[in-house]
Length: 369
Image (cartoon, rainbow, N blue to C red):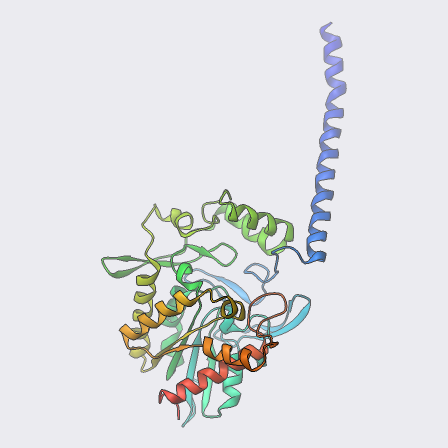
């Protein structure tokens, strides 16, 4: 009897193995079909433009990630090739001399993907347009995709003294307010951040990525299916990795449950420290509130712009709100498109509006002739 049972068990093992292989193959086919369907339909949140898959972005132990120095080439944006070039210190553009030529004012632009020029060619960025518009200006684009004000501060403290800029323009966006408070951003990549302790900024270096985080970053970088699933789970606040869950409280869990700094005073402290660092190099800070067409039409970022204006007023920093320039352009041509076809980043026309507004403001402020 025992021998009979053993024989039956021996016969069913290959069958079970075969069933498992069949289920695995079916699951693999479903994954492949799902991946293909999402990419072809364009309905996923997937954009192959994040830290792992971007050839012009590199990991950085101090900043979290940074522009790849010396990169030059085309990268696809929704099927369209976009030319990007970084110089020897990571700015988007050509190399520059150690100091500007006589009679030329050097402007350094800090910001995120809006400043860098996500989705447009090199010559279509606001920095390149300002540079061409005024021969007496030399505009250096130090924008980095996914950066918040904290990383822009750290980048300037690292690179600013060697760039010798007369004017530093901080292009601030509404998502910087929360981005400054989190320990992970930009495809859930760990980043440094600051906390406020008794009114003083304290730096918290980036946390280790870990196995789970590494898998997640790779998945969001290369898989439409994974990114869509991760976005859905993150929205539902059930994603399993601490550094990947949505919200500042979850992201900061890696820092021993330290209290989250309130966004407004943290932004004020970061801008104040940036101004001090710029003035130590002989430059002047200008803060620009960046907006996109969707925010203008829905008026979703008014509170951010009011907060930023108040901070700059208290710190006596020149402040420009780009929204009136966008509104004027849209009144002039209600059918105007100031965004990319597939998302809200600025198109070339919007970059021209921003370049003109910044140039006019700098001239009106007496910072340039």
